[in-house]
Length: 162
Image (tube, rainbow, N blue to C red; front, side, top):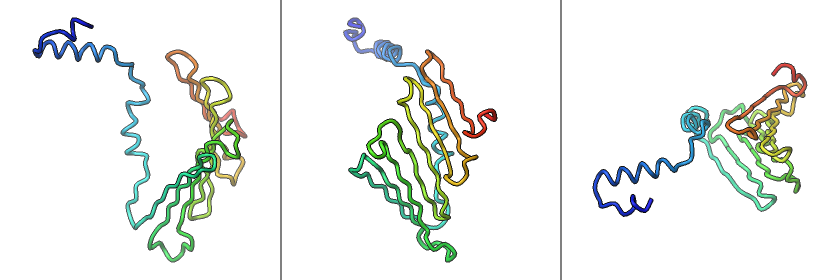
C-alpha cells in the first residue's frame, strides 16, 4: 500500500491506486442489481388528477402516518383519502413491526407486519386485507446460511399451496 501511495503522479500510478481500491471493495449483493429498475417500475405514480400527500413521524413509538388526499376527486367518492400507518414497535412491543396499516378511499384495509426477532437471520412477514382469513399470506426470508438466501411465501390457511 505504501508504494502505491508514494508513487509519482502519472496515469499508470493513478490507475494502479484505483485498481487497489476496487480490489478492497465489498462484493456486490445480487438484490442490489435490479433495485433501481424495480423502484422505477413498482412505485405508484400519479398519472391523472391532483393528489396531496403528507408524511408525519410521531413521538409515539416512532410511528409514521402517511396521508394521501385526491383533490378534485369524483363526486361518487365522499372521502377521497388514503391513510397509512407504520408502527415500528406497536404498543411498546418490539418483537414485531406493523410495516403498513392502510385504509384506502374505497374503505378497504391492508396490513403488513414483520418480525426479525424470531431467529437470527430469519425475517417473518404477514400480509392481509383484514377481510378474508383465506387471503392471509405468510412469508419467511432466511439469510443465516453463507452465500445463500432462502425465501418462502404461502397462504396461512393453505401452506401446501406455496
